[in-house]
Length: 126
Image (tube, rainbow, N blue to C red; front, side, top):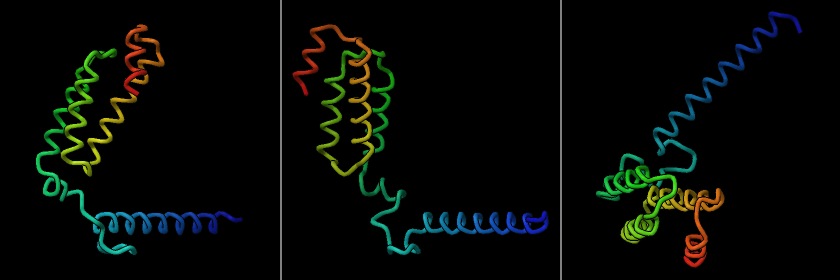
């Protein structure tokens, strides 16, 4: 393939990629335009659908982030997460944070940071 044809092919490929990118971005920004029809909800509507959940989520995330590598308050944190999830079971960030807490707890278990009593207590809770 000669140089001018190759250059023209690259320019067409770039134009197509930009066009698809803009179309995808516009569709994601305006869900009612997409093929599947209007979306169930917009991200901007979360505060109206779940009033006060973002503040609770940020408080729980802050509590989770401030802990030591080997935490002693997993049970308290998980209890508060269960209360938040029972109040709003459809709020996905709560479930995500709960999975992060369990992952952190399992990572400490895998790394051998717990003694035998903590291991047996963790096994009993599962």
